[in-house]
Length: 202
Image (cartoon, rainbow, N blue to C red; front, side, top):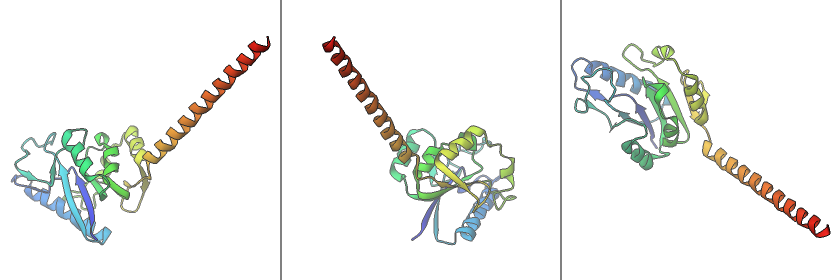
């Protein structure tokens, strides 16, 4: 059975003369890396948007991707999450603005035990680690990632496995809070009964 990977922030192809070859070489580097490291049949999908692209010539008509929108809190992304929650084995962020990503949404798209891999694949960075060293991860970003993922070192410096999971912790916390409220309620009831008993005796 094949695995499903989702690549974020990367065009699948480009028709722009100035970067057509670069996009093709980057996609080749991603495909080569996936085949070499995961050694299974993998179906790869690409999700990205032209909005905020540094090259203003990139628009919705001159590149291809399987999904053309940003994975943020918007109607297209929310619908995508609703339809695809828990189906991906791995999600690779390629040259993404890591400090602005929605890691909760990424975690929800992954299967149990699925992985998040942050890379910077490019023609001059075929293993996706060279330019990764130049990225400044904000402390709040690293903390946000840690909420949903556990870091490991199998496939690079920023390889993470989905936690099992914040939802379970939330349920435990809700149960704990409910038990605490019940205890307080019972103490208040006992206190009221005790006061009534004292009044009857007095």
